[in-house]
Every structure is written in C-alpha cells, then in structure tokens.
Length: 467
Image (cartoon, rainbow, N blue to C red; front, side, top):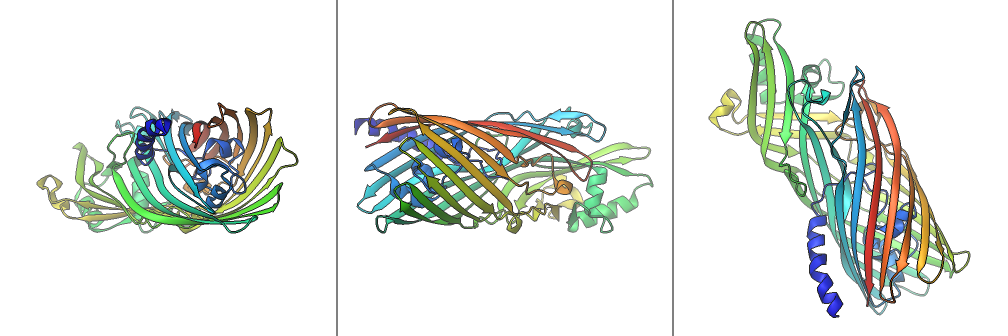
C-alpha cells in the first residue's frame, strides 16, 4: 500500500493532463489504438484482457481482470509528419512533430463486479505552418490547428456467469480547439458568393456590411486574405472549449477457454458548441491608388455542434496454445453523422475599434462531407517465457475524407499502420508494456489543387501495478 500511495498523486496529475493534451490521430480523428497492449496488436482490443484501457475500448473486458485491483500509468508520444504543397509545387512542412499524451486507469474487483476510473485522450488532429511558408500567403500569417478530445470514464463490468460478461460506462468529455486559418481572396469569395460556394458558405450581417463596403470602393478593389484566429498557443488547452458526455456498452462471451468474442457500442457524444471570447477575424483589402488596408475584428467565436461519432465494433480472441494469442477486431466509425460541416459563428464585440462591424455576426461553414469509416485491426502475441511477451499487428482503414474537401490544416488520412511492442513482467505485481506504430504516408490532392501528405510514428509505454 505504501507503493500505491506514492503512485496515486502522480496518477492524478497525469489524469488532469491527459484531458488537455492535443492529439494527432490516425483512424480519422481516433487513435489507431488505446493502451500499448492493444496498440501493439493493431489496436484490436474487444475480446481479451488489455488492462484498464478497456474503459475506452470494450469495458466488458475489465471483467477478465484476474487481480483484485490494478493501476495503469501510461504515456504516449505522437510524431506526425505532415506536408502541404501549393499548386506551384512549393512545400510547407508542419512544425508540429511531437505531442505527449498521458493516460491513467484504475480498476477494482468486488465479487462478480469490476468498477474503476480512467482518463484517456480520445483523439484529434492538427498541425502548424510557419508564417513565412506559402501557407502564410505572403503576409506573414501563421496557420495552426489543434483539436483535442479527452474522456474521464466511470466503468462497471458484471460477470453474469462463467461465459458471459456485460459492462457499461459513463463518460465525461472535454474538447478543445485552436485555429489560425488564412484564406486567399479567391477562397473567401467562394464562401461569400452565393453563385459559387463550392467549398463552403458565409453569411450574416458582417458579410452584408462587407459587401456594402466593397460596393463603395473603386473598381478593381480586391481581397488579399481573410484570417480566422482563435488560439491561445498553449500545449495543454485550446482557446475554444466545450464539455459534455457519452456512454458505452460492452459484451464479452467466452465460447471456450481458448475463444472469446466481444461486442461494443460507443454512443455519439453530447458536447454541443466549443466557445471562446478571445477570437479575431481579419481581412485585407487591396484598393487601387491606396494600397493594402487591413482590419481586425475582435469578438466571440462559437464552433457549432462539434461532436464525436458513435462507433460499433466486434472482436475475436483465440489462444491456439498457452503461448500464442491471436486477435481481430472490426469497427465502423460513424463520421458521416457528425462531420458533414465545420461550422463557426463569429460575433464582433462592441468595441469602438470594430467600427461599423461592432455587434455584427458572421456564420461560416466549410464543407466536410466525411464518410463512415471501416477499420480492421489484427494482432498476434507470443509469450517467449514467463516474463517477456512479443506483440505485432496491423491496422487497416478506409479514408473518411473526400479528396475535394481535404484541408491541409485538418489532415486525418492515414489508412495503413504496422504495429509492434512487448510486455515485460518486472515481478509478480508490476509489468511494463511498450508499443510502437508506423502510419504509412498517404498523399492526396484536394479541390484547390493543394497536396497534403501525412505519415506518423507513435509510441506508448505503460507501467501497471497489481494489488
């Protein structure tokens, strides 16, 4: 118990941090796996004991826990490699190349029930392009995104009989977002012009006032750029934030001592809007005879109806003998229900600096039209001896994002992963598990003719203590 008391304060710190860590995920905005045991096996996790990561995988597998209680402390390192290439062939590399993701889980058995608590990073996406790259449009504009979603989870698993296990969880969800997005004049006018709107739309009293102002300016006046900006620059919190809830149910059926089947459903989140009162909307006009004229409006930004999708998954675990474990999962992630649009509402505050735009509103929507995503996860584990286990796997998915609407600020296109790792038993109470994954490069060209390249290398390490 002395060791446990020394571990719990650190666990609390990791739990708090994991709610606010930005992520760059690779099954759409989901991670390719949760917990290093499952991740090393291609992310497959629905039908065997993979520790307290069960709370974000299939909570029914908690019921397989052989010990009275278990504490897991984990740290992930995410290494995205993202490049955006202009229509003229100029590349811009994202400088966001390393993110750290803590996680924490605790579970305790009481007869046929297992309960506990876990905090995990669910997923997200993001990158950053230097102001002097082509993404700065020649005006020194930093382009940056960070989307992060975390969960604090309360699970309850019930062993119905020797074969059937049922479980459910209640999830508290936190989401954060930073956005620094520069749009060329042509891209902005696509949103504003009702005769165009191929990639999105913009409306509201700010747009009405903008169009009226443009009508009074000399012929040939153009827009150099529009710039959306809500970002606090923190590595741990997004400027726009929202809170909500979701839930999971899970089932595990042990067909025989060597074969088990798992089934789980994760509900769609109830997050609502992400909001910030520290946002800015800038644009620059190029007026004949006068030159550039820039204006920045300050106010509130609301990201409308940001939600995490539902997921349905099934898994199989097979032990041909005492040394081998073979696992396979399939899952359908219902992105189509939540990622049709990326919608924002900007409300300029009443400050005099906002001039005639004070208290005016703009609604801006970028079309997304994501499809549902099918994911296949395969893995094999071999127990070399009583203390060492090797794991390997693969993760294969469809790309949910239509090429036309792929945004180089929101890359989430990886389709194939190779995964590997090991488990090391330190003593009867303690183990260390490690996973490494490689997400192979995917190159796409979007509707603007911009190339987007995304590859990723991730690693996780976990210390587990049983008591």
